[in-house]
Length: 220
Length: 266
Image (cartoon, rainbow over all chains, first blue to last red; front, top):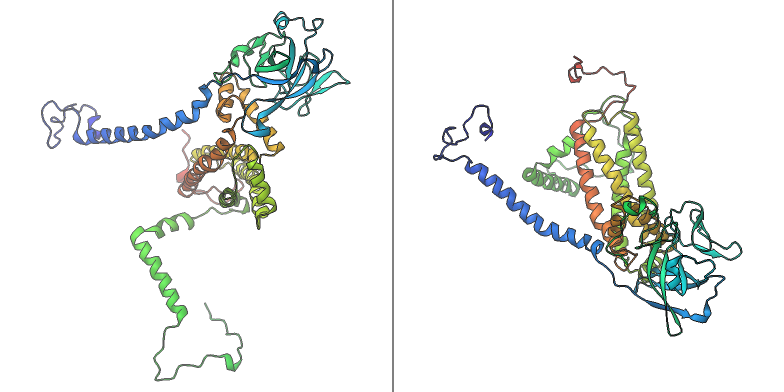
C-alpha cells in the first residue's frame, strides 16, 4: 500500500503490478476494506455517542416555564425595611430548591427607576452576585452582607463593598387580590437596568453583558 | 547458599525418617505447590502473561533511584483504595436531593458496621490522593523527568491531575449537607465566570439553569462512573510509558552515561 504514495508510482493498481488489478482501478481492495471497516466502526460509535452527548447537553438548551408563587399578603410588608420570605425556585427537591427573598413595598422616594414605577413591591434575591452565597439583611447597618467573601450591598441591592460584580438580582412582583406574588428572577446592572437572569459572578456593565450571554434555560 | 541448621525440635515432635523399604510419599504441601505451578503454567501457556509481567516488574532502574520515586505508585494505591471504598459506599448511597442523600450518609456514618471507617477512608483518602499527586509532580519536575522522551507522560499526568480535581469537585456535593451544597453552588458559579462559554458550562454542570432535581444524580454519575473509568485508562497509559521509556537517574547522579543515547549538538 505504501507504494501508492511512493515517488513516481502510478496511481493505477495495474501499473503497480498488484495481483488481481484491472484497468482503471486506483483503489486497492485492501484499501477499500480498511476504509469501509473504519467508516462502519465510526457510524456504530456515533450511533450511541451522539445521542448520549445530546442527552447530557439537552438541559442547557431547555427553557423552563415561569412560575408565580404567593409569598404573603399586602399588609405584611413595609416601605422602610425588608421582610424575608421563602420562595420555591425548584419544586420537588425540598430545602435545596428554596431560596430566601427580601421583600418590601416600593418607596417612590428612593425607587426612582422608571421601570420600578409599575411594580408595587421590591423583591431582592438573597443570592450574592459574587459566587452565590446567601446574603442577609442587617437592619442596624441597612446593608445586605454576604458571609462568604464579604460582599456588602445597600438598601437597593447595589454593591457597596467587596468582590460582587453587580447588584443583587431581583424578582418580578405582582398583586392578585390581597396576595403578593413573586415571579421569575431578573438581573440588574449598576444602573438597575434589567437583564435576563445571569449567574453570580457575571458583570453586566459595559462588555460584561456581551461576554456573559443569557442562556435559553433562564430567559425572561 | 549454605543450609541453616534446623532449630531444635523435641524428639516426640520430630518426624520419623523413612524406613529403607518405605516408598516416599509426596506431602500435601508439595501437592499444593505442584498444583499452583501447574495452574500458573496452564494460564501462561495460553496467554504469555509472564513475559509482560517480567517486562513490567523486573526493569533495570538507574543508579540513585530512591524513595522519592515511589510517590507515583503511592498515588495509584490511594486511587485503588478510593475505588474500592467508593464501590462499597455506593451500596448504601441514595442520590436523592429531597433528604434521602443526607439521610443515607447519616445512616452509613452512624449505623452501618464499619461505615464510619469506610466513609472516613474515602473522605480522607481523597485529600491524600491530591497531596500525593502534587508530591509526585514536584519530584518529576525537580528531577527533570518530564524531558524528552517523557513529555507525553507529563501530559497524561496533567490530564490525571485535572480528572482528580473533577473527582474532588463532584464528590464534595454527595454528602448533601450545608457545606456540600454551598461549596457546589460557589464552585459552579466560578465555572460560570468564564466569558462566553461559562454560563453554558454552569448550566451543563447543574443540568439546568438552577440547582434542580437532576443535579445531584448528575454529579453522582460523573463521580462514580465517567471519571473513574477515564482515570483507570489513563493510569494504564501512564504506567505503560513508564515501563516502555524507563525511569530517569537523579540529576545529581555521577554514574557514567551512555553517550550513544545523547543527541549530538551540530
